[in-house]
Length: 372
Image (tube, rainbow, N blue to C red):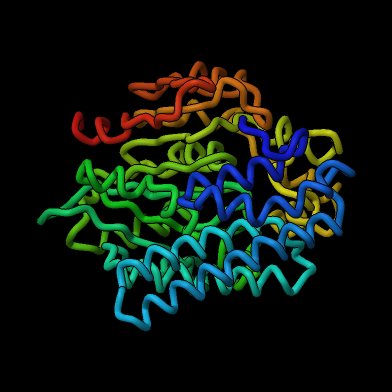
């Protein structure tokens, strides 16, 4: 992994995610150069001053780019404005994910991110519907990215992981890749992520089939979706959510774990207990308590331990793809190998390992639908 900040995993990861989503390297350097002093002097993971500085500098950059977008929009240059709004969205996302849940900065940055995202995709006329999925006694915010073409199209339900949002999912480009293959994508802020957590106060629950069932129920009512070709994909911690959903929701036609997560006690449980572990964000424990709806680390650990595919993965009866990084610092490769080995009732279970030299993502999910 490229390390702008030597030995600061969370900050390096945040920087690289911003670049992946469309940030400009010169602007990223503008936000990060003043932060180097913090990175050299301390471990930033639980350093409150460093955390505030990160949010401040990325927020200043986001505001500047957002002002450029507003200028372009005022001059009638909608496509250019839309692109800048989306870049400002990336920077607001990067600021927000490191902010403490106890800080008003978090919700403020999140609100600015959502506003920039919505303005950007509308000005660029992207094929996105902003929708709400009925779920229990509330709704889950979601984005439907529609594939081009008439008739009923296959669809992938996209769940998230631990520390990003449906807007991040769209900006990473996977929905465009599915659309190029004739597949629509429903990106859901499920319990624990995005607006479901930040605005509605819904912490995560381990039985992800509940969200999957709600999403499928909603998709089945549309006349542009083929109800027999609905799959699920989820990234990072979603490597547990997607297989869990596929095990108990038999309407799913395919499952992609974009990063394995066999036993969350061996990943989040370990990270929670080990202050030296590679943590994806600063203030990781603060976010974990909010994410899991826990008052204490011990309570969070109890909830983490419920997330295991032991006794679950053998109930997956649709095709399964697990993709995993060879050098993943948060989840060891053995978890991916175990997941595929134990998926004995899947008609096609495959593991694709990506090395440091590769920057691709598998298109295997598209072939699952064509073979049914």
